[in-house]
Length: 226
View 1 (cartoon, rainbow, N blue to C red):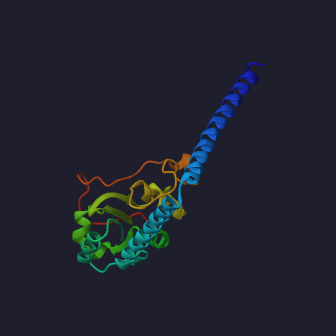
View 2 (cartoon, rainbow, N blue to C red):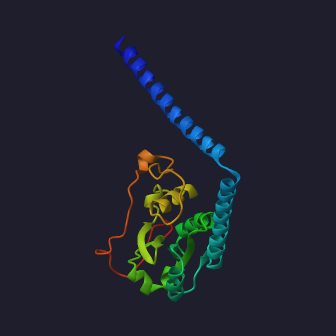
């Protein structure tokens, strides 16, 4: 009997919260409609012009990104190119890879998709074995590693697949979420809910490189093939 009473109380509380939320939404919509109804032709024209200007500015920004190599996932040939590419773009994701590491091919597949979707970010790849100075400077130890760069500074790393559910079968959405957590892409999803297939099993902790303790130039592989 007591259990039934508790359920009834909880149900009433939830119904009341839903009603309150609906009321707030309706009031907001009513206010917006009233605001539009009260506008004269000059105000409506001004609003239209503002929206057109915003659209024009957005298109100009898109063209600028495309002119700088955004919108595609591409390889850069040298360390010197890396510094130039990073200098001219606000957000950069750089995949440090090795030809013989199978997991780098998996990462390539997902980054190719995300580069086309998130043109606000530049997506690059660089052969770790051909860039020893840069790998030492950034403390790249595990392959594959993504260096997440914002305003010319390395803000975060995705090391191996640890942050992606510890599985080779992670989804593109999972990698997209991880990049969103680092704020290097415009992520529209919920950062508090990683899209892991088994969130309880894998958890949500991040693995970052400890710049004070990692040493050496030997690259460990995160792939079982090596």
